[in-house]
Length: 147
Image 1: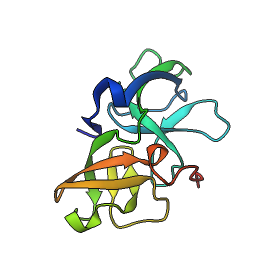
Image 2: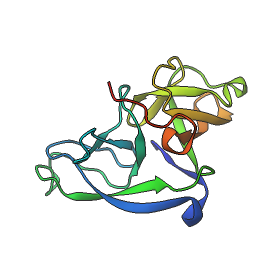
Image 3: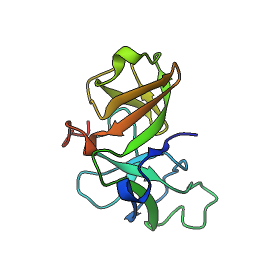
């Protein structure tokens, strides 16, 4: 599943076309961020800074544009009310976590055991393995440095 919009539709999200890094694999519905010089996007990870949104297609080594810096569709939250369903990759979700910021494990899951980057706002508890989140670009912790 990775990440997907929970609520908001066209009023909360829009599709933007971003240049991807050549020879880099992307999982469909994974989070991406822009490298610091602004030339392209890469899959998010535990060291990511500001997240942009959700890439809408997979890019694999067998993709025709794998080795090129081509444009790919990214679903970008455009409202602070945009909500996203996320899988928990590390830790166990609890209702008491609502309102707290957490990190990523990788581009497809969040890490509830770390709060150093704070790129994910845990917005609503769904289950021990799922939560409704907001990404940092639409929450209070913007301009997080990539490490």
